[in-house]
Image 1 (cartoon, helix red, strand yellow):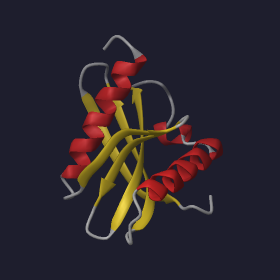
Image 2 (tube, helix red, strand yellow; image 1 turned 180 degrees about the vertical axis):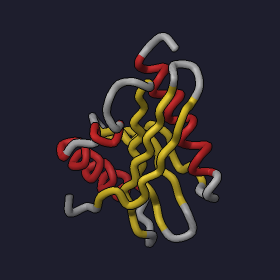
Image 3 (cartoon, helix red, strand yellow; image 1 turned 180 degrees about the horizontal axis):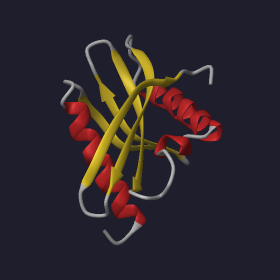
Amino acid sequence: MNSRGELGRRGETAALEYLRGFGMELVARNWRSGHLEVDLIMEDAVSIRIVEVKTLRCGDGFDPSENVTADKRRKLIRAARAFYAEHPTRKEIKFDVVTVVTDGEEVVSVTYLPDAFDALG
């Protein structure tokens, strides 16, 4: 795996397949509104899930979910509001994190953190 972008794309693909295993459907990948971006927007029977994917190589020494900072959470909340303005729904909007760890070639682990935070921060 050569670039950080390639690593991120692989992680998003692994996360997408993992979430599909729970019966979720992809609404959008890399959805943008201005400078805001959401890695994955998924839908299940009762909610729209705004999903932040964090991917790291083995041995980086910390949990990838630690990269979902307060600033990143605020941006995701703003992005969710923009998404809702374009696509109103009666479903509840939830914020999830998926962490993907790779050895550089293969996915070593995928961890799903549903309802990782809420719109209150």
